[in-house]
Image (tube, helix red, strand yellow):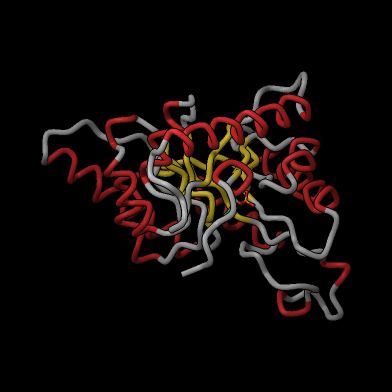
Length: 258
Ligand SMILES: *Cc1c(COP(=O)(O)O)cnc(C)c1O
């Protein structure tokens, strides 16, 4: 890890980068409701999370359970909201519901079941320990936005152009939404997506906005849209993103994947 732990330089560096991103957000969404800025702290130390909290950051995102659980515990006194944004194995659900307010990567019915079961257990654990129950888990359904018209076949996942960046195909979204909406302990918050690499993100996020409008016909409260990363936050805001997930433009370049 190349970042310097909580040095004055690091604090100034984070403050400058955060300010630059906040300026971009207000320039891109001057009149709309302010989006929730989730600062993605993956690969960076808990000391950076502390510095960010001191700069007014309230929401942080992580994509690996082990790393997230450790950082959330280390910074528990700060009262931050933790967003799980990575591919999630069902056997990690039990751990994730101990610290995460939201999961942005709900991509299959079996994960919905695992999260609901984990939430029931977590509430029992809290009651037995004399703790308050936790709030329902906010669930964003992750959509695969690869352009179906760019594929060569009859529309199966394998026929799409470009590599998958995760998520359920749009055709499978209604059934997944029904499962999440019906699951006790979960709240269907809305949709999430990562823009495909081989397409203008404005087109992909436009499709996401259409899917969000369709979802809201049946579930009006599922009106959140988690879209937009360092490179495409403007495109996401133009298509109605309510939650941005910004990592490298605030934390700096990530160390090589371990
Ligand atoms: C890492 C990550 C981000 C942040 O990406 P940056 O380009 O560093 O801003 C956002 N969303 C997901 C799902 C990620 O894994």
